[in-house]
Image (cartoon, protein in one colour):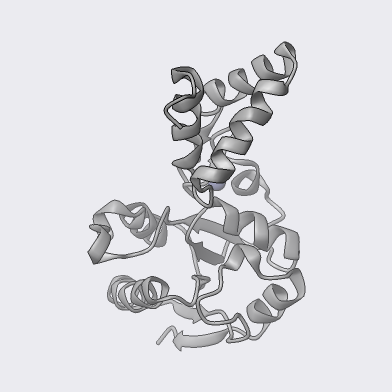
Length: 204
Ligand SMILES: [Zn+2]
């Protein structure tokens, strides 16, 4: 590997820092990039460079969007009384593709994971509490992945929300395989999990 020129080594190092990309894939991708024509490579570089500049966080739902408030928050045809809490922006994509949910979202930007130093303060929970106190929400759906972190977050939020306001709290039905990622569930499974959601806490 030491034979490779420094610029290639640096690109390989950056690529292998991406999730799911090992050193071998990173090398293959780096050499693939080298074979691209100048314009394509330049456009690719500019897209990465501008990625964050052209995006904002919606101050209502905390989703990553092109504008604030985002299109979903601005859509008056959506049901304002149902709030679906999800881990990240990709879960919004998965649920929107499944097409059954017509309420609003709140993106946590992660799940509780004390081992990784992620506590309530690292997630968008304060923003969630503010919404619960100011918006007329009747049901909160905890649509979190059935992982250890997901379960811990469901328990924490059920307690925290329950102490804050009287609202119905539900979670997705089993049917999502344990440890599975919401974003990889097929649309029918996801729609069923949403339809068959279970009550964790009634509004009383
Ligand atoms: Zn929004």
